[in-house]
Length: 210
Image (cartoon, rainbow, N blue to C red; front, side):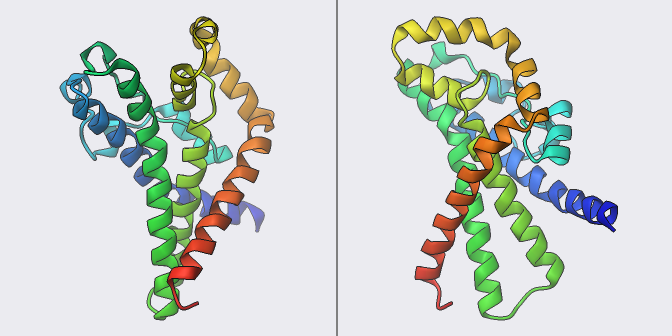
């Protein structure tokens, strides 16, 4: 029974994963292009085609452990009209898009429930979209290279810490995998995820007659 449940949960995460990763990476590419960098567009990443954005290892860990990553969007910050502002907003665009997708999906979930429209499968998919997007958004804000949070932190942090981040980057994938496999990262991320979910639910209950 538990095996069937796990397979079902994994199957539900697949469309949610495709939506979350695709819009996350597209947001990075679009924001970089907005600030004057054509690199992502030249590499075919300014697209909503999920196959252009999936990272095999990151996708597998997201399916199995609920935490993962996509193929990084290539950027050349020297194209940015404002270097620090460009790095900040390009990095933040992905997580913010995930949180927006989660909020819209949760709003739709409650709206359909209020008007009594939709199948149980649709509700399960919507809930998976909400959960995966919040997790992906929070995960990417963790300040470990090459996650978005490290770039945001590097822009806001003193210059003395920026050298440390550059030294850490070659080992980032190993560090992330260890933190994921030992569930240490999940112990931090999932409480934050639940808090954000609760905040979104509170706002939506104010907007809808629930």
